[in-house]
Length: 325
Image 1: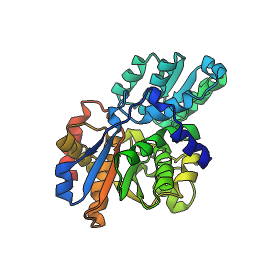
Image 2: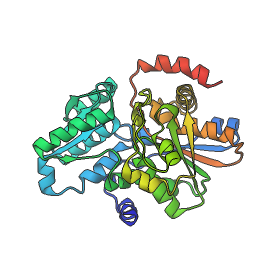
Image 3: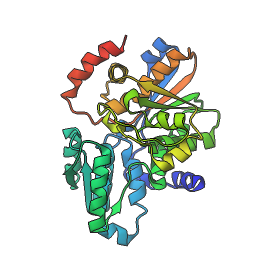
Image 4: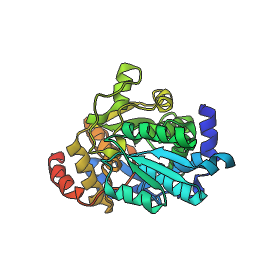
């Protein structure tokens, strides 16, 4: 499977729809924290998140018969937009099941790409169960957000771009929800340069990967916090975990206040507004470098998405002041 994923990354179809995103140096932030900090700007994709890569990679490899039956996905938002956008480009039908708690901006974005949207349940797991019922009736193809090696390969193309953009890297910080982004990037980065340290970043209240590493097997969390909705997953995917546990060097867990401070740091430095999951990497780099006394190192993080409801910014601003302490 590893060889298949690496081959797909290097012979990818994602650039039919995705763009090679900017790697942005954070000048003032780097001076302040005594290291070189970079952000991979996946918020620059057409759907404002990296999820377009994996969704299109998967859909582009379907047979004509599969395409004719359409696709179904379950998602809290960004994967939904990736699938809907990809389906629109391929001119096929798509149905997306989203938790009822999904931010309105993400629901409206999916509808804009001519996809049928069904709101169901309070979590990804609820939406997933509903999607399986739809597939049983329609025989459409399910596009999994992370537990699929072709999807993982699509996300791994970020790592390929990163190595082309920066010759010397000490640490790469990658957000983890279901693990597709982490698995794809970590596999490729370690294949090309084993000396790069790969750090997984999760919220404290939905750290399914950290829990699995501790238990040495996948576990199901009793509950997950939904503030960082992009990574609110109770159990890391089977394929991502089988891959990722071999390549992770360390983990860093963040409080809600630290994540809010990360959103503010990103805005202050590059005038971009990240969604909470999008700020995980920078908040993780900041905390990890301080905890471990890093100096004169090159740290890269993935700004994985920017789909956030505007009205949430008031709450984030208030919490950021606490997080900065």
